[in-house]
Length: 72
Image (tube, rainbow, N blue to C red):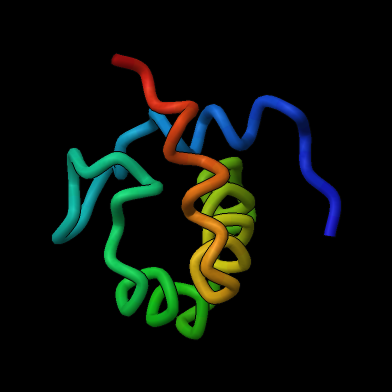
């Protein structure tokens, strides 16, 4: 899987734009929600690519790599 350098920063700072978790920073989304969304099929958009990367990070327990990138 390939990703752009800034995508980790986006995961740490971009908010979910809609749905039950609207306003939640992507890295803070519950793992069960990310897994559910992944299984439903992700949109072919920037958000979909970010959620795919987030899925890989969450299921492999790598959130600690992204959390330090959160804006203060």
